[in-house]
View 1 (cartoon, each protein chain N blue to C red):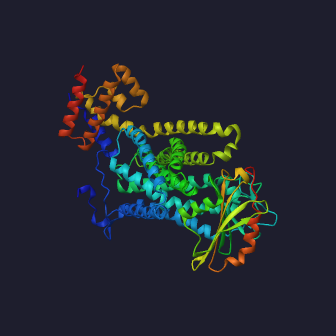
View 2 (cartoon, rainbow over the protein chains, first blue to last red):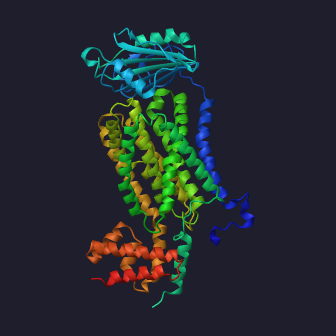
View 3 (cartoon, one colour):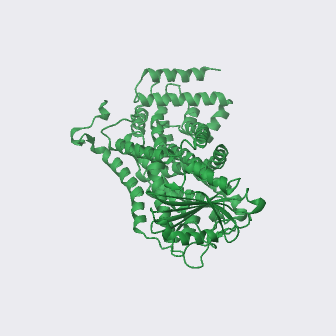
Length: 205
Length: 384
C-alpha cells in the first residue's frame, strides 16, 4: 500500500476511512431516496381513478370495451383520452385484489394460435386448467377462453383477433387476462363476462 | 537550456491539481464508496437476473440478438469516447467502473423500481391519460439522471484525486450514460420480444436495435455527459472551477433534453412536427453538448499547457505543437495545416500526449518513461 492510500489512525472507524463517508453515504442516501422514497410515496397515495357508468376503454384503432363500474383504472386510457395503440396496448383494471389486464399486440394467425403462443411463452392460467371454450362478443368477435384454478389463485385468459372474416388473421391480437385470489373468480364473473362481451373491434374490422 | 523555475513550479501544480498520473485502484475495502458501489451493482445484478431469468430460455434468440447487436453498437461509441478522453485522460479501469455502474446499478437497482413508482404516482395524481402522455418525460429525467450521477459521486469517493474537473465529469458521465443506454436497450429488446410473446424474436430485436440505436446518438451518453459536467461545476473540485449557477443550469438543461426526447410525441402533437422535431432536438442537443465540452475543457487545457511548457526548453515541444495539444479542434486543425500533413500532425500530437502522461506519472521528475517519450517526440520532429 502506498503512503497516499494509508489511512491515518484518527481517520479510521471500524476499518473504514472517515474521509470516504461524505461521497459514499451521500451516494447511498440519494439512491435509497430514489428507490424507496418514490415507492413509499406511491404506497401512501390511493387510487382515485374509479370507472364510472358510461365510460369506455380505448383499445386502439377504434376498438373499445366497457369496463366494470367501480374498478380502478391503473393503466390505459378511456375513449377521448391520450389515445391507445392496438398493437402495444396495456390496460390494467384492479378491484379488491382482482385484476383485469388487456394486452394488445401483433400476431398473424387465429385467436386459438395466439393463445397457444401466449401460453408457450408465459405459461397457462394458474392451477388446473379447464378445457378451452369460445366466447362471442355482442359485436360478433369470437374469443378463445382458457381458465384455471388452484391454491395460488384463479385465472382466465381470453384471446381475440380484433377483426372478423378474412381480416381476422392479420388483425391485431388482444389478450384479456383476469387474475383473482383462489376461489374468488365467481365474485367477479358477471362483471368480467359483461366486459368481455362489450369488446368491439374498430377500424380493422 | 533548462526550464525556468516558475514554469517547473506551474508544471508541478498542474500535476498535483489534475491528479493525472495517479493510479486507479478499484478494490478499496476501507472506502465506503467501494461498498456502496458493490451494493448497487450487486443488487442491480440480482434484479437483472430476476427480470431476464424466468424467460431467458424462451427468449434466447431475442436476448442473444440484442446482446450481439448492442455489443457491436458499443464499438464506435468507445472509439468516439476514447478520442474525447484527451488532455488529462482518465484510466480505462475508472471508466469501466463508471460504465458498469450505469449499466447494472443505475438501470436495474435504481431506475427500474423508481420509474415504476413515479409513473404510478403520475397516474394517481393526473390520471392514466396524463401519465401515458407525459409520464415518461416527467419520470426518467429525474430518476435516471440522478441514478447515473450517483456513479460519478462514487467515483469521486474511489478516486478523489483523479476526478477533479468538469471535463472529468463530462467523460465519466458519458461512459456511465453509455452503460445505462446499452443495458436499457437490451431490456427494451427483451420487453419487445415478450410483448409479442416470442414471435419473430430476431426481427423484433433488429427493429428495436434500429430505432434505439438511431435515437441513442443523442440519448443517455449525451444527457449524462452534460449532467455530470454540471454536477462537477456545482461541486467545484478544482481551484476556481466552482460555478453553482452554471452547474445547476447545465444539469437542468440535461434533464430538459431528456424530457423533450422522451415526450417528443406529445410535444410535437403529431403532424409535420413529429417528423421535424427529432432532428431539431438532436441539433440543439449536439450544439449544447459541444458548448459544454468547450467550457468543461478549459481547466484541462490549462493543465496540459502548464505540464508541457517546460518541454519548450528541451525542444521536444514547440509553440505550435503546445497550442495544438492543449487546444480545441480548431487549434489541432490549424496545426495540421501548419505541418501540411495530417499524419505528421497526428503523430506529434499523440507523442506529445504520451510525453505529458509520462511527466505526470513521474510527478515532474526525469524518469525512463519521460526520457523515452521525449526522445520519440524529438525523433518525430527530426523525421522528414
